[in-house]
Length: 302
Ligand SMILES: [Zn+2]
Image (cartoon, rainbow, N blue to C red; front, side, top):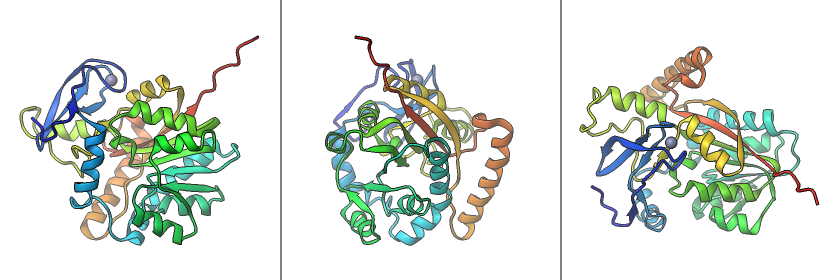
């Protein structure tokens, strides 16, 4: 079924613990859908160490990194701006710096700085880290768990742009984010979600699960995209990790050039209209922005 020997089968949904059923397969990988919350997830789930090696060996060669920093940041600007606005609207009152984990070429860091929000980045890519440092940003070259050990309570916000859907151990990742955050701190995550994948993955196969899943603008992208959550799935996994879901927002479509850019702009307009009518039930949003607020347990009386 799959070319990675180190993988572990899921017996229940990673988000809510619900039962799983086959959604479809692509390139030798299988995605299951949760019957309770609708979240799509790789099953078996890749082993984290195997996945780390796969990123080092294959991810770059497969063309997943944008090579031109300025173009990447320009095309992502609409998305980054929406993330900054979400944070400013919900968490602007919390003093302290924010962290952009998986900051890439620093487009979000640039906008945070422009909005007067002190920000630091983290990325494992030396090339990207060096580029961001050359633009005056503080960059940590560390994994999430290591950062959480070294900088507990250091941040009023943690951002992830197109990162959370890659993580094979989301509970551990949320625990690390919880540790990094101050009281009332916000986790702002933009990620591709299950609704778009389910809508087109079902439509393009005419409901036949045995046909291979379409790639869908790199949304169905194994083994890199491990979990595509629904808003309900994010709510459930967030609550288990000590967060409350502060909001679910429409993720804008990136801009582009040429005909592909025109298609993206048309989809952006359609999504604005659809979202205003149906909200989170509108199925053509590729991505959503989730805002999770850290709950602080009430002090025990002594
Ligand atoms: Zn579920």
